Image (cartoon, rainbow, N blue to C red; front, side, top):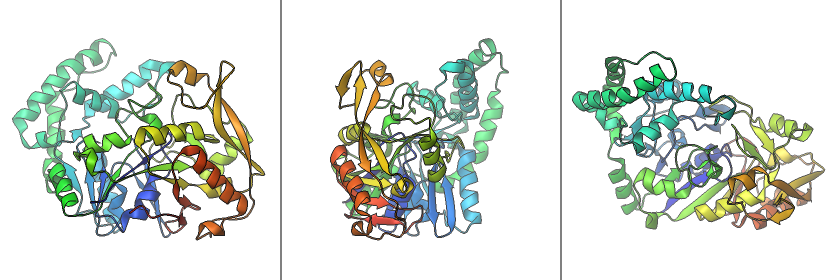
Length: 427
């Protein structure tokens, strides 16, 4: 009954798509359990590059069933756009399953997201403006629209009316925007119903039956640990739980069924959007990491903020997720530095702190304490085993493993599907 959770151990964009794709040939189901089309995965297959936003990465693996779980928020227009794009490139998308309990991102959720963020000005969170947060807010406020509601026009109309009674008051009186008509929203959503019907399923039942039949199920988190609504750098976070516990609630599988939790770590650190980032670089090194690593957001198109590896947040990710393994990505990007700084602790008000500060204020004022590790100049993209790596690259990996608190079981040495060193099996 192998059930694996695969998630980001930093602020997202660590290369989860590559890791999921690596496992895809051995996995029967790949499940997105939270987030929406604010999460971007890039998967390189041969000379083909695929940018996925809402769909699970497993959709690119023949024989694998991709699942959008109940914890995901779904924009139907984005879903069908992605499906259409993959179909045009010859990818079979017919096996996709979508939970009937997943919540729908409505047009008014997108409007509210954009006008609210614009109104905040300098205090903005840095959202993607895709309606993710407002949809989760509606879910918690028990006024959300679920996929299953598309198949009962009366219930759908009642729910949209109730939501717009509140939203239109805010849009017209506070933000000076036009009111949104109920029939317009209902009509647009109903237009997706029949196209969506072949994919809709009781995914909780499907996944639990699969595990009972000894199928391999991989739960794929979007974003990263430090963007978790409860355990991240609040309020500069996403609106769901990318951490391992979110896989249980977002897919309807009990915690006793999870056998492995794999954290994806970039060999340095990046972040998109606002919020604290102790190791962020504003110099030539930061620009070099951005350029060599191709650090531009898959979903947002924004340049990622870049910095050196932060062992403090890696240890934190190990703790809050119960990580059993790490997949270290983009080690090749660090080739060419004579010395590579690694953040081993923070200095806060003159004191050395080796664990993530509990206080938001302290974290904002944290200054990195660096240990210098020797770099390497040899090209590592052709390495097939750990012993193929230069001695200094091996030492760098071993140091990160010791500092982070879990074994590094795979290493990405290039963007391609086959440019990965597997040290220990995840299955």
